[in-house]
Length: 364
Length: 274
Image (cartoon, rainbow over all chains, first blue to last red; front, side, top):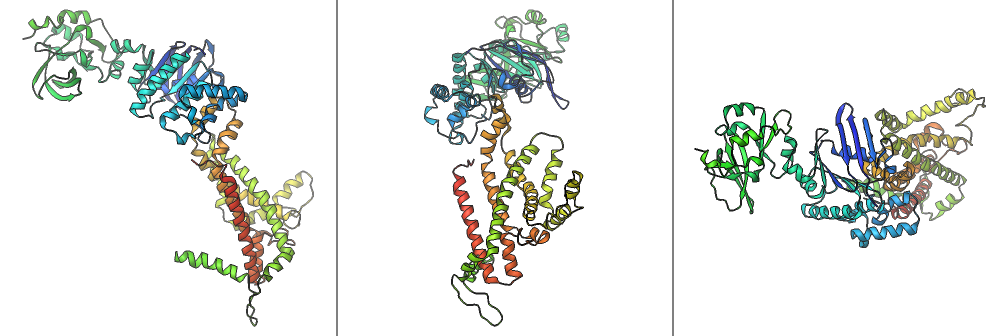
């Protein structure tokens, strides 16, 4: 079994005039793990269902393995799918659930039993084959759903928030398991999730969606370090990127530079701030959230709140004055109205705001 | 509990007791006659006739109304335009008072100028006295019963169908299951509890029918459309042979109980409950 690539070309989809997908074009590489990430209602599940063939796009084309499958029924698309609710047949036992598709295709009993045995072993379900889905735990049901997908021997796996019904611990386990499974089978995985941790930990490529559009397609690392839009910056990372208006740097930036950056929004990851008496951002300490290894410090500057991640042992009291510094290479600049990243102004800011080691002579 | 005893348990016990006594008439007191009523029953041609009628009535109405109601439910459960109207339309026969319904059907069945005969006339068939001929009277009743019950049972099937998550259909579609395969392997088994419930109801209804026989045929001609309960009604309130009516009732209850229990135990093993 090996993967096949999936391409979406200018896909539009609307439900009675309500647009769900707005000109989606995507290349999903063969044999890789791609996560479709976004808030609820962003169209990620719709996109998945269009790939599966359960939904037809209003316009646009779907290619699987280079073939146009826009009007091909789901069964002929070389896909297997795992549903959020698992969609197990409640009256059939585990074994019958797994081989349901094989029976549909009229595979002879001997082959069926062989495949069932291998799949059950792979997923640790061998002892549970006679049980009904209602007698299984959430994690076991999840495995059965996976089993049904594996036994089908298809080259593309589609998963629609498969872990959202599990508790946190099990979710972490299944995350690894699904990831390992994808490696082992070499299939193309298209995985829908609203949980950025899932996307970042599991995927080779993350497709971030919002309002029926693709915000960014990148590896998790690139998406974290180089978000293409304000939305991507705010969506990825816990806590998300801190954004603030350039006005907060009015002490440091020259008036003409401030004027230039009036339509811009600055962003910095909480961990990129350092507490530095000579830092360019001057505020007071607000809420402090102690997390053990880290402390999250809310820093009130004018009427904005900046979140700073400091080492756990940092001792501060609420209301005390605090100065934050940052490295210009950690600064992200976005256009406020379009939300797009604009790096052009960075060199000028770098000139005005030298690296934090040198910044001491600037302040006060 | 008091009400239950007064109106259900006491009459039931009293019925059994009455069946061992003769019917009291003005001068003659009712006396204990043991199994005499039951012997009469075994020799009563009319009893056997209505029992056979009832058998055919059940054999036709139960499966047909179940199949029809299931088909209608599957149809109106689909996404199709005006399904709200369709659901209502199918349910109407159940809401209408039976007497009114029976009258409407009487018009349909009227020999010569009834709706059915008029349509038959278009194709050159001869007139047919649907309700008046012993060959067709029972089947005419059966048609009415199916028409009425199917809509009612459809509601139960529809309710059950709505509880089946659509993702099951999608999962089956991805595996390449045809509509019929999906119905056979998934929908039908999941509807089994409903089918059991509906079929028990159908059996009870088939024995419980009085009103529309009364309006349409009064059991005639020559008892050809009479059913067990209607016969009991006749014996009890036309001939005032209450003891014999009690005997018939006991027999009917015995039949119903046996059927219901049998059905429960037979089908229960095959039914998947959630």
